[in-house]
Image (cartoon, rainbow, N blue to C red):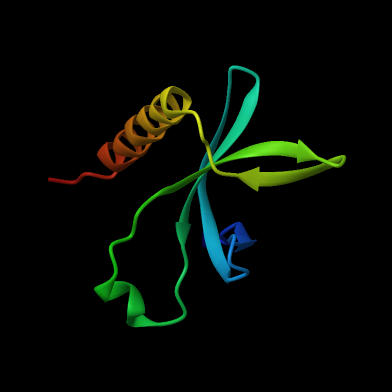
Amino acid sequence: MNEYTPELFELIDAHGNKRNFELLDSVVMNGEQYYAMLPTFEDSEFLNIDLGLVILKVIEEDGEEILSSIDDEAEFDQISQYFAESLENFEDEFDYD
């Protein structure tokens, strides 16, 4: 029996709000590490919410790795395209139509 244990991260936004995210994919591109994540939910509240993919960059701050938003539009577009294609290929593997 295969068991799936998601890799979860508790992130704190600029307003101090805590939220859990599940890591879907990661990639090292141009020497930088990026994560694609989805917010997690405790119950069926996700049925009424648009689940947008969150893409974050691993940066080092004060000798510690932290996750940060990607401010450069071209960099964000490149990474977003990579994750969109990666997730589409993943979905295609399980398309039984």
